[in-house]
Image 1 (spheres, rainbow, N blue to C red):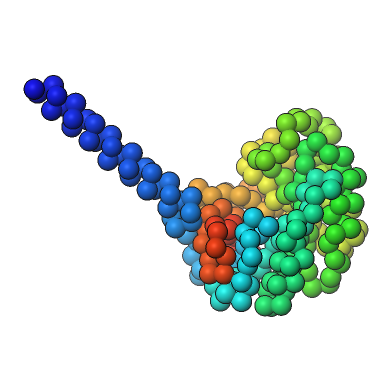
Image 2 (image 1 turned 135 degrees about the vertical axis):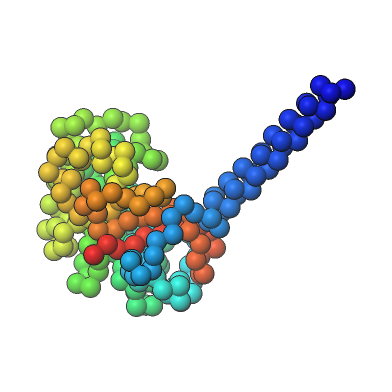
Length: 232
């Protein structure tokens, strides 16, 4: 009987722990709980980045959350154009938020195709934020670029963006991508937008934007959204 009681006790314990983990996962996955809560005093300039995955956005409500800048996905790879790009770009601008566009870099498409895709779909506007090149492994193709070819392609992309938009591009990177392909090159000195959702990023790389959450919640957006602060 004692063995049965012990087994039941262990079973109840694991059921309780499983329930707690499920609840925590739900809260984190749906944006009700996150790992980072940056001080508005230290980081007063907050922003978001969005794509068609956020669905229809009520930009007036987003503005009421004291969001000051928005990066909108424009393109990906050689031919994908985000179907919500123009709507999101115009909607955020109408509410007085600073707006910029980003391109998700695909490792298996020629760099010239990707440059043409971005610059042919993004308007050149003097008041726009600098263009962003999104560099990460997540959601990318299986091609494994070499240490020689990838930095060269990134440099070509940066030069094309600088020439087209007249502003210094920003590189959105994960730690993994930065360590693997940028840290040991001169590209690592460019303006960096670092993704760090589990803690405050270190001083290096020298970042100007910090994505501190990938499942934030805001009025005006029904699904979780990426949250960022500007470092100045």
